[in-house]
Image (tube, rainbow, N blue to C red; front, side):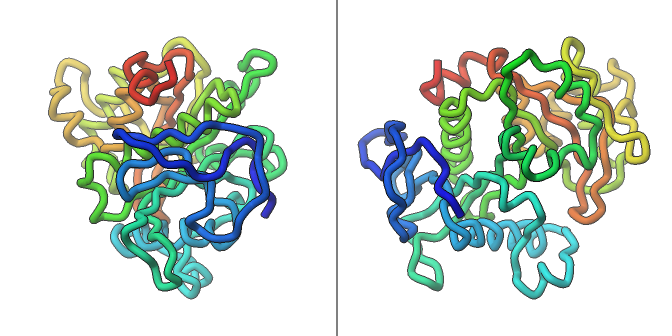
Length: 297
């Protein structure tokens, strides 16, 4: 797999995050501990995957989290290889959080978190965006200003024993935002998941997202008609916002804190055992506190 442009070799530093400067790419070194490092905190580092082997490490983590810890249903090929994969993986960039203090079966630092991203130029080669399988994103694509750049997010997961660590998700976000800045991304978007496939059981968080965070000024992205699930299940004045926030997954709450908006309608993903919502986050409208937190303001 060809090296993605724009990131330097590993660096070290002090502080909560050790930020690596962004330079022209150099030749790829082979091993995990020589990948481009975007940021670091003690033994944890966030990096870009550069080879098929490294992407497979992300896919194995995804399989463990989605299919073994959670309730996703693997295909026979996935079960045999113990990897989560689809046709988009080869066209995506993959961010990894690795723990240098822990090694895997091959003696490499263990992959404990991952994010999958695809830029619009790569989605064109892949035949479109993953999100288009659940949502009509044409209003977003046609409504963008000329020259605008999109980055689709997905397949985010963290190993269970690292979810309680306060630095893991911030490292993933740090890597994500550095990547977005390197490629002058204008809009982040994608599907985010709530665990479970019973929308009535998710009435409170779905209704909260509908009433308080829907896209009002922006592209009217809507779930595909054959998949559309109504999110407006409770009246606005019947919603306890604090309870609703507690019912949301940490990743969705993180998107909301950053300033994301939510599309119209949810989608049941029976393979993954989730109810998905559409996330829309223009970089220019991100909460300045988030940009400052990751050193991008």
